[in-house]
Length: 338
Image (cartoon, rainbow, N blue to C red; front, side):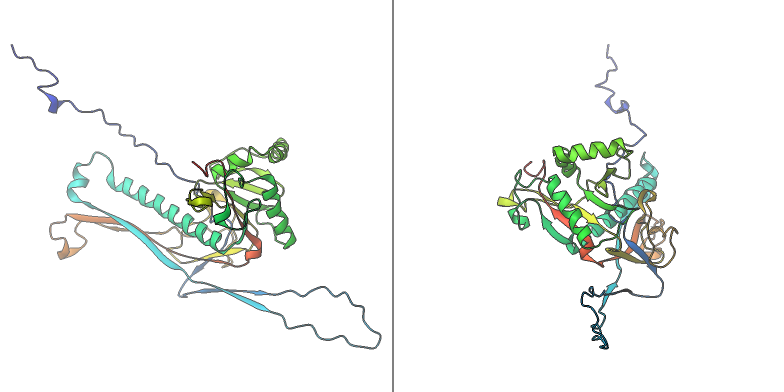
């Protein structure tokens, strides 16, 4: 007698399908948290001005003699002009009718995540390109960085803080500067005994543990944030085989962002405080523009209502306004030779 087996009824046996989708891995998108911000409306660019200071007077006045007039004050102009970025995904009517997963919802989430990653990466690259560069240890350029000789150390860290202090940089968050480093750089610093001892002592005085915001603690007037989206230069160190990493030291008014109203991304990640250059301190900037084209919205170009799209568009411009208050320390770490 013939038996009905898994082999003969293979089409009737289905793999169990998990309705709950797995969470996609995302880096902490934090590079845009501390810049000045402005939204434009009917304007193409945004101009910032900075007047130069005067040096100290060290000569005493001569009785009855008027001193010479001071040199003319210098004015520095910085212009921020937003550029537009965007991406989209298309889907068919049959996919929407037959797919087990909520396609439109998932596509929206994926595109939203891409928007955040894009904005964070654009900002990160502009900051590291415009910052004052320094190199760990005795290295003098990216190409001379070699692991483990130039793995980040406490001495490198304190040198950057001292440089900000020497440049009279203003704190960006409370009384502190902000430091953004890669996860692997954090691993290197936590193997430096001097750093660990000081950091542990600071933690005993109330520093918080790692949060979703990327904050891992405070030391030497610096709040430290960790992100896997910190800039990495693959194989750009010694021998073109060593990975080089960036570490940003940020002070107030070192950089700013601008975008067009309605398409300027929300850079106030995780509720971090921000300063709005347009005077609207504390007001949430609008999210990026989400554009949905329904099935058949193309008219005669889609006569059978078979195609639809969903996408995003944002406007974002950035300028480093004071590179003396923004340092980028290039270095190696525990993962540079992996």
